[in-house]
Length: 350
Image (cartoon, rainbow, N blue to C red):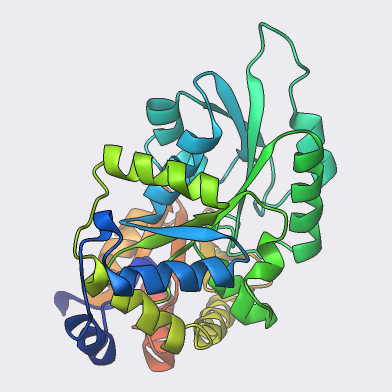
């Protein structure tokens, strides 16, 4: 047995640039992005703005920075952000909204990370001097801890419309927005209609080594640039990285459906494993969870044993594991990962 990880399904951030992507990066034309002189970065920003139906966009080092800059532009200290209780922005970004923007969250309980316009409106604060001011509503597409669920476009559009009517900014955390678009065969802008800001991640299923692109109105992006510089996000000759994003948009978007099919394959192979429950019951995209609570096994122990066989899954809690498929894990690798999980679960606990 080897401790070398051969199949890594802990996250779709495990991907590495392909030979074609690396070639595009080394051939990129570059300049100083801070002076708006990097043609490759400008091309990526224009491309993403068009994809999302927005006026402008800015290339940033990470998706977390995309979210945090959006809140810094939309909010003032003491404001409140409405989001799902299991949203990435609430539980997995180091309390960035509180630390940086001085904003707090008002969360909506939902198993799959999706809520409708009526639920959003019920969470709004009544205007009072002693209450936080509701300022932003956030939707995460797809939902990470919701098991890769896809927000229906109609639900998103209604949410944005209701937010605008109430004077609330609407923001899309688009970490896997392109997964949703590829799975449903629609343009990404189908989901962002009416939203004030949205972004896409390049370093997950698209296979880039780094980066996200935040989009919105020109005035919003102008303010975002100030925060990009203040937070240390200036990249200078960023065209080498932006070229990876352009390559990914040309080559890696439609193939995201293969990841979804592989996630469904994994779910199907382990569905009858005694003591294990798969969430969600219907896998839509590239994320699923394994509940081991009725098996008598600890997720950390199962993970450690699988790693001795060269396979890694995510550990989300004492008895909860996460599986995320991606372009560096082809169908045969996903099948082997599922078979390894089944073999480990058949052995008695140490």
